[in-house]
Length: 68
Image (cartoon, rainbow, N blue to C red; front, side, top):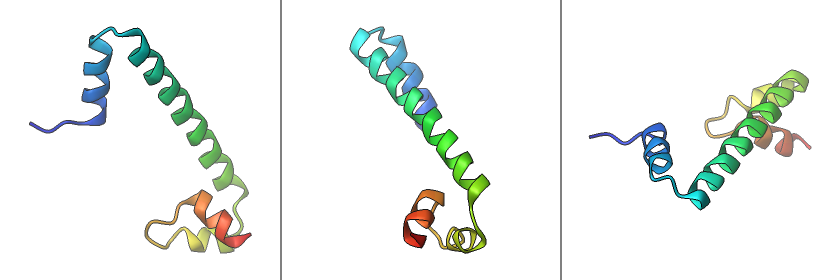
């Protein structure tokens, strides 16, 4: 049986424990913010930064940090 993050999340939600539900909500919120930041970085990226993202393991955020 393969456990995916979504399955684990669903299982944790099924426990109906307030603290776990709150933490999952925070994680979901942060995931959305990270996606927004990634999208913004893609929109403003310059060619050098785009080239850096072609290196395995280097994402948009890391590429911007390296460039600066």
